[in-house]
Amino acid sequence: MTIDLYPEIIRRQDLSPDKGFGTEIDEDCKTIHDATKGFGANKQRVIDTLATKDATARWKLSLRFKDLYPNDKGGNLAELMKSEFSGDFGQALTMLAMPLDEAECYMLRKATKGIGCNVSVVYSILCGRVMEELTLVKKKFFDLYSKDLTQLMASELRGDMERLIINSLQAGEQPYDPQFHTDDKAKEDAEIIYKKGQGRWGTDEKGIFKILCAAPPEYISKISAVYTDKYGYTLWKAMEKELSGNVRDGTLHMLGMKLKPYETIAKLIKSACAGIGTDELLLTCCIIRYQHVMKDVMTAHIELFGKTVHDRVREETSGKYKEVLLAILNAAWPEHGE
Image (tube, rainbow, N blue to C red; front, side, top):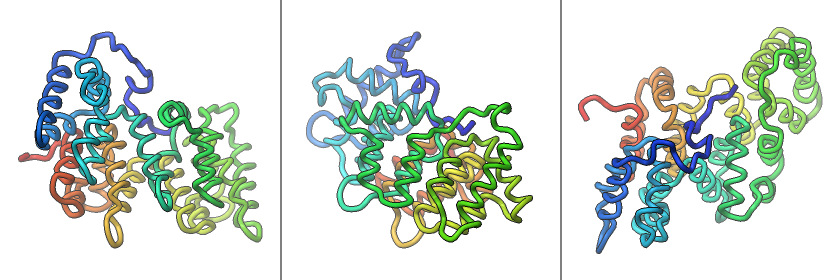
């Protein structure tokens, strides 16, 4: 099965933890409340309190803040961050102040607002995910914005990218079943993919996406092995050759999340910093969303690029925005000497 990106407490949607929130969460809420009172907020105290927590602690903090400080923006910690801070720094704190499933909905909304769509953010959130988490995102998005996520994607995207994303949302990854995902079926699907791609004039992306989006990692590996034996190159290479632009990037990201997730995430972080100018929205989304698996991502990033994600953040960002991203990273992979 594709890796889980949500900690257990978010997957359970447990609104009343058995052991309570604890005094430390209450103290953190008070620290943030005090740091944002009066004229001018204390940025560093908020960073030290909010950005140093993992996703589970931040989930508890966002819920507990509503109970303790209902007069601070209605107890909505994200709205408080949005009102107190601005720019990329404020956007990062706003996302940190939300439970992770809610933060992903906010990221998708940001990616689709205004002129154009940040497709890298969209496919990184919606492609190559376990069905349980996608279901939570779709439900949460409707609860927050009274909009159907599938309909929004259909209105924002066009052509092959729309087909990829809609298939990801609707098909969902199947659990691996050796009685169903047999070698014979892998041969059939490998042939279908070939005929809809390499073996025809023009590529039938919709048919290919339908197979790939639903296939669990174990079955993708079977298809790729058959494809390699029969046609001389891997399924990855076939998609790389047949597709182009953003849809190629999205499809390879989906395959990567199923087969080599930590390398794929490391490459996504690098892509946010590639070319002229950093894609701050994508970079922020990556650092926050993947904190739960950052230890493995960091190892892959070092092996691939010879540097830590911390190094990349220092090269590409500055000021308090840099500090908040580094604090998130250090909560998962502390740097020596800091």
